[in-house]
Each structure stands twice: as structure tokens, then as C-alpha cells.
Length: 423
Ligand code: GDP
Ligand code: IMO
Ligand code: MG
Image (tube, rainbow, N blue to C red):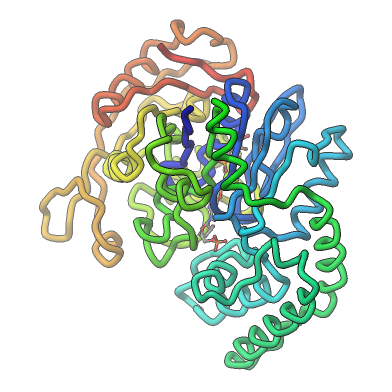
């Protein structure tokens, strides 16, 4: 009765949504354990692209039970929009969808505070998606948050008003108004619709399913280098994006966890501020951005692009105990003579390190690269993992040797079918 966990190994947008959709047929349950509408998970099949923010990426498979776990921060307005879009596309998203009563609620005032606080950071901005993530987790940890289960209580409106009043005082500290009056009607409509869904103690649901022998896939959001503890703090998100977050975010004991899928692009991207040692600010970075269509799924912002970073990947693999790597977007590098791989960082004093240092030092590092030959082959035609162009097979083998983890999937396009399973 295993739980397998899928996490991003970089700064998010590695292709997690696509892989959850690919793996879903072999599971009974897909469960999101952290994050919220800051996530944008893209799934493409039958010529249609779908972007999910809070709905788990198993939703297109009718046999799958989809769970929004207690570790998630849920915006009812965004959630209603997502469900409406799915209904318009003929997907009955609600029948197999369960939401934890312990998940935190994102209020319009959390979104307002996110903006106010981000503006107050001035030059030190995080580059938040401004979906209210930080302020909502702050209320959770401060024990002042409202949870999904609270919407069923008779005093919900009163507790909402008290919370907003507190947020108003926080905004006043920055001489700002919340300015949420126009958003409140939609919020209460969405809350009403949310109250009609299957709200439950999902930790019991999941553990009961486990004891019936059902297979669970835990779907991470963001990436390991955005983790609140281990990421490039303070340029991180506010949740535990690593595998441990699946235990606290779903109420599942560590002993049930079996496989840990680590998702990585064949290169690297980051959206928002913060250190990114292998970032390419030249035409090579621009070429990757164009070839990979590297623009945010949630905010549309251009993503920063660079080469793959082995010290950073090793760190993420260590934190997560990754058992398999899925290498994404190999097709994006098809038009390069050489692929660079960062093997070490050089410090200011000239010494080399393989360890990810603290923020201050991270900004002074220069990456050291090894060049591998590119494969210069259009991968559209490759449908058999045994028929990888030899230079791509060598790239995969090199990464396996360096990272000491097998690569079991090479993804060569956004579509469900553009997925090569390696032995
Ligand atoms: P997630 O947040 O980890 O689910 O990733 P996103 O959906 O935000 O970003 C990944 C982007 O890459 C999406 O636009 C996907 O459709 C696309 N994508 C996923 N896998 C591949 C691939 O192998 N090749 C190409 N070209 N695009 C891919
Ligand atoms: P998925 O699940 C990429 C980044 C933001 C910002 C920082 C903090 O699609 O991979 P937040 O809104 O959480 O306060 O933003 O984290 N970020 C992501 N980057 N993919 C994501 O999710 C992200 N979610 C947050 O850009 O730098
Ligand atoms: Mg994304």
C-alpha cells in the first residue's frame, strides 16, 4: 500500500502536471499536499492544453480520486473558476474531488496584503505570484487563519470580519487600504459553492484508502529550491515543497512512502527574484526561453533560463531521497551544438565547492561547466526510448552517473504521448 511522491527538483515549472497526468493511470488517488493558486500545472492531450492551479492533476482520469490536502492554501474564487472551466470542457470535476476541512482559506485580504508587503520590500522583492500565499501561511502558523471547515460554521461571517479587521490594521501600518470591497461578493458566492463540495477530514479518507490497498500519488507544487527551509531563502515560497511536506500536508506516515519521483528540466528555469547561479542573460538564454516557451503558466511572466545545475540537483535529490528522475523538455535543447552542465561552483577566493551555500555567498559564485555534445535531432519522431539519439542517450547516462539516480522518463514534448519510458 504505497504512497509515491512527485516533487520538482528545481525552482518550479519542471513539468510536474504533465507527469502526474502520465502516471495517473497506474494510481487510484492523486493528492496535492502544499501550495495553492501560485502553482500552474499544465497538461496537454488530444490537442488541448489545460492549466490547473489547485485542482489535482489526476482530474482528467475518471477512476482517480482527487484530494486537496490539509497542507494546501485554497482560494475559493480561483477554485470555482477552475471547476467552471473543467465543466465547460465536459469534465465532471466534483464527483471524485475531496477537500480537506483543515486546508487554509485564502481571503481577498490575504491577496491584498501579499501585494502591499511585496511593494514594501522595494528592491528586495520576492517576485511573488501575489496569490496571497505568504500571508495565508503566515496566519496558519500564527494560529489566526480560517480553514475550509470553518465555512460550515454559523459564525463564519463574524470570524471573517474579525480576520479582515486584523488585516486592515496590518495594511494601515504601511499607510495602505486593503481595497477588497469589490472582491467580497464573489468570495462569499465562491464560499457558498465550496460548501456544497465534498469537504472532509482527508487524512482519514487517505489512510482508509491505503488500508484498502489503494495506490496514492502525492503531487508536489513549486520546487525544492523554493522550499521554505531549504530553498534560496528569503526568495522562496511559504510551504514545505520537499517530500516531507507530503506527510504533514496529507496526514500520511513516512513509512508508507515508497518511490520519490524527482522532476527536472534538461536545463533550468526560475521565475521571480533570487539567486540562480547558471542563469544565462545572453542570447543562449533567450534561445532556450523561445524554444521552451518559458513563460509562466500562472502569471505569464518570462522565466529566467540557464543550464542544468548538478550541485543544486544533488542537494534536491538528497533532501527528497529521490528514487527516479524524470528529465523534461529534452526537445528544447535539440538545436544546440553543445550542452553545458554546471558541475561545481567557484567561490570568490577561487576554491571550488559542490555545496549550495547561503544566500550571501550564493550571489558571489560562478558556475564551472563541462560541455557535452548536443544531439541536433528533432525528437518529434522518437517514440521508442531505445531509439534515443546517441548524444541524448549519453547526456542521460552522464546525468545518471553524476547524480547516482536512474532517469526513468525522458519527456520530449508537452503532450501526454511525448513521453519516453526508459528501462
Ligand atoms: P509544472 O508547474 O511543473 O506542472 O510545469 P508547468 O506546467 O508550469 O510548465 C511546464 C511547461 O512545459 C508547460 O507549458 C508544459 O506544457 C511544457 N512541457 C512539459 N513537458 C514538456 C516537454 O517535454 N517538452 C516541451 N517542449 N514542453 C514540455
Ligand atoms: P508550480 O507548482 C514556479 C515562485 C514565485 C516567487 C516565489 C514566491 O507551477 O511549479 P509565492 O506566490 O509562492 O509567494 O511566490 O515562488 N513560485 C513559483 N515558481 N512555479 C511555481 O509553481 C511557483 N509558485 C511560486 O515566482 O519567486
Ligand atoms: Mg508551473
